[in-house]
Picture 1 (cartoon, one colour):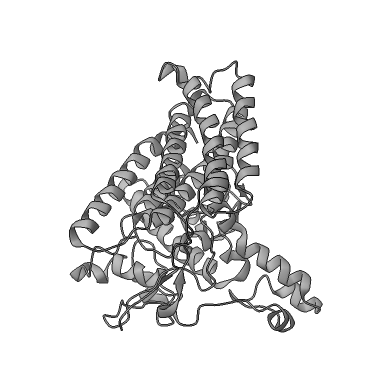
Picture 2 (tube, rainbow, N blue to C red; picture 1 turned 90 degrees about the vertical axis):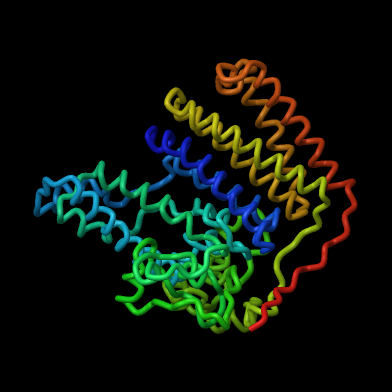
Length: 427
């Protein structure tokens, strides 16, 4: 985990640089691809996923290390061949786990966050889950274990494989010639994120597009059918923590409400979106039928409020970065305390972005929790003074100002509801 934290200290700045480059390029091209509130939600989701990883919130049913010790039939000496096979193995496993996440009701809850943005840009690539805490796809790694691929190599290549999926979340790159036949390109992945009937549940591959062509799930981006992004049942919130559990909450309610025991049992494992007939009739849900007339989620946001929301995101990321560079010196209780504060912070300011009544109560909890941490640590914020003199006092001021700003924006700022955006796409 320490190595992962170190890798993130390089990866996160890299992601931000590429996102800024994309923003500049979109302005030059005159293509609107970003929405401030959506971007803040996406980038906040990336923080929550990082915190989940640092906390080790994952239950592994069968570890890869155990499998390779007990199932290996071969010993491969060539280190380059090991890396290549590990990369292909990860890509094969990624295709099928991705496909299962889309196709099975309960597994969709592990993945909905990634598709929840109604925009498509590099920031939405960082919408990663915190809800998948049980490693259920261990069986997909059995082929690598049979080959005896070392655990350390598989883990390292896995991180590279994950980071390599970032770049193609963009609308600014068109078709890429012969590469369209080999790798997953932005065009292929735009199809995957689209809710158009022609595109839904297509292009599950992560690096090599071969898997979709081999297993019958490939769909090219069509020039006369521009993709519309999001999910069929819009999440209608900026809060990434809530988004992670919206689908699960819906399944729980459906299982509780249906009268048939068989439906209570099978609702979890039916195709994604399936609901018992009695529940579907009594508790209908609005599903997007025509993506071209869908209305994007928006909330009232003045220029000042958008600036404040960006400030919150930036400050939380600076604290996350401090956590990463200091990770090796932290105890688990330090990590848990720090991560909890950052999670509450994200929940607070994204709830405020939703203009939800819970914003002030959550901020009050955050206020007292923040000062509790300062008190417990002798008025020092996790030893941050070694990097910046007076930083703990600055954080105390920030917590206080955040409380005051939340009350102001929630109770006193009067902002007219912006018109909900209609998605206008010419076919």
